[in-house]
Image (tube, rainbow, N blue to C red):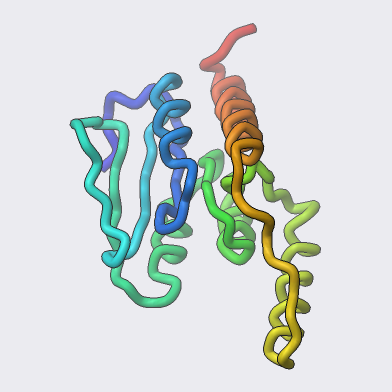
Length: 166
């Protein structure tokens, strides 16, 4: 369960199997007292060092979409969800959560449809034997962009809840 010590009415949920910015999430969330929920499959099981009541690890079966289903079921309006999965981003958007990629890209109702269509087109090209361009290598600039986006989202959520005053 999420700690009762938490000072916020929202949480950060991380699609943790391949998330390269967990350290930034832990640091940034810890500074603001935001609880973190890591969701991963048994094949990527995590053990966190130390005892932190504001971090919860949920391990799911190693079947397709199990982590995504858990994340959708765990998310609520105002939560921040860290994922690079467009389909998962669309589902949590419909619940009022705010998805953001590890590269700092914030998914919105205004951009998700275009991303889903492009994903579909790319999949069709690959099924037909074609090749599509993959993402560039993840780097330091991506980490900085993510940290900036996460801090901004947390600050916005705290302001909405009346927990930050200018």
